[in-house]
Length: 146
Image (cartoon, one colour):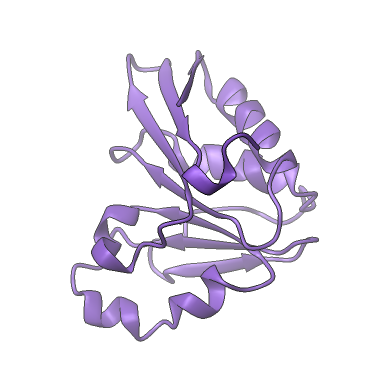
């Protein structure tokens, strides 16, 4: 597991961009963290690293559950904050996304329970202070070293 410290949203965005540069189609990135910890900020950076235009306004899909951004590969951004019933989640056909041609970034992945893919990248964001974050990245066993 690699751990980084960011001191402001710009550094979190930049770390996300570096992560995005290393992603490829089929990668699933699960971002864990409390409300307001910077999950969406990190995913904005990932989108940038994937070459998604800054004109695309990357935002949390809390009410729509999923937003897809065009890129090469595309980014499927999920937010499961509002969902508590895995039946609702199963109806989304997640395996089509998780095994598809894009990159998936998942906020609130703990709500997926057993539906979480085993081969995934886990990112844990811990709020150290109002502006400082400790960000730990765990690569899947199959991907180590990357």
